[in-house]
Image 1 (cartoon, rainbow, N blue to C red):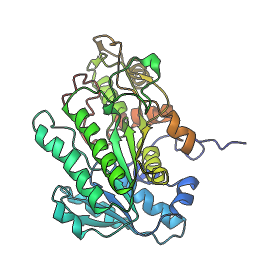
Image 2: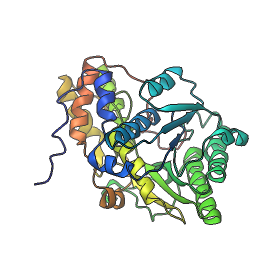
Image 3: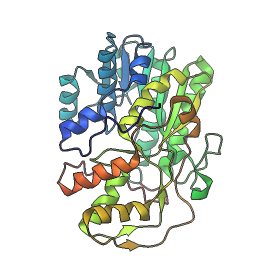
Image 4: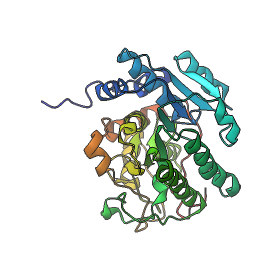
Length: 350
């Protein structure tokens, strides 16, 4: 009998400690994979929204595997709390500004690199920085770790907007997105592709559409509006998303899929979700009416993860469960990061 993916999931999440424990709880597949990794595992750009939990997830998987794998988190660590949180959980941290090529010399050699460096919000105000972070930094990383396997966190923004009935973009579709940020993401992939061709570096690029936590994400964006009685914008009426814990697991395991020349894989949940239907679910949970503004456009930013799921399996956390957790979190005043996704943006300006 197939395991029930919801078996070990709580009915509600009462605190950040419970949330963080769940987010960094390794499954058997990850524990087995981590046994194959040589020491150390280096996570670049680990100070963002996903990096800390990914690094701790890898660390906990190594502990469960009884594998002496050091996990090293690299970032500028402008948020000192993030650095302290990592170190308290057994992750070694290194402060490094990766835009400076010489700074990478201080980093230890590693056979396995996860790159989470990127810049999105603020692009419209500082496009030069966006292009520098998404092109120069990848070149520095690819040069420094030319003999390593590299898993690169990319974005589903590299695709154009598509009709929901399409099921989302496939990896073979043309990369013709809208806006500077999205085009800088294409450039990031092309830089890594170039160095993979030049040096034979094994690379996999993961085109992520919306990881969700209870403290940020598309689901929270919708829930907050419904709870506050604010209208929900419908122009971008559909989306994909994936529980952050599942996304982090797939990112780590994707190291085993890195190849030369480089390959790209879509990373998200398999369902195409309706903004209207999700908002109505939250309205039912909160016991209040939902206000809408606008109407669903014919297209949305969607990608299809069928290829990745056929290799690594489907995400194990049902989004219905995450919606329920999110409603409870908002109702009880759980801490938020105050970092909206702006998923409704259609002109590529972030």
